[in-house]
Length: 163
Image 1 (spheres, helix red, strand yellow):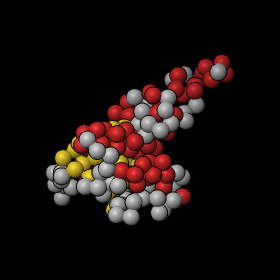
Image 2 (spheres, one colour; image 1 turned 90 degrees about the vertical axis):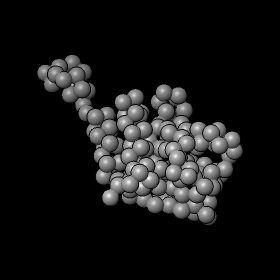
Image 3 (tube, one colour; image 1 turned 45 degrees about the horizontal axis):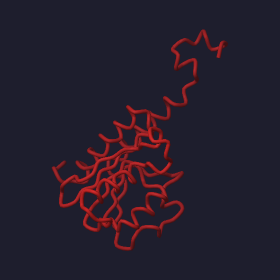
Image 4 (cartoon, helix red, strand yellow; image 1 turned 90 degrees about the horizontal axis):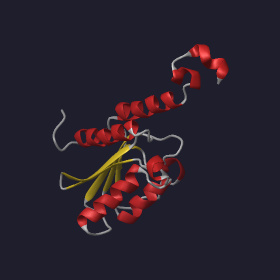
């Protein structure tokens, strides 16, 4: 059952952010930060728009949440993110002392758990696999579209020899 304050309902909000990234031709990862069952930050990837490799959804959400709260620590907050954080974002999570991280899809290639399992703050709880299929599907769809041959993108296979 989906309740207003469930991990699934908050992950659906993070997915809304991922869809915004998708529409902006950014890697579709979305994040929200929740404190006391209230969303205090929403973000998605801005790496292309800002030409900044550090502008991941999590980093944007941390900045927004700490500005909202007026302090750099988030021990009473939960980060909901559609993809397992990379080591950079997990390191930032350590410094914010975020209370909990809930992610959707596991990142087998770049997820922090592959490289640095102990990078999180010792008090940070982690839960993975929330709405995993939905979170993975938007990424798969995005990269499928990116990898289409150019002639398919143009919609005219007859012009393939001109490319």
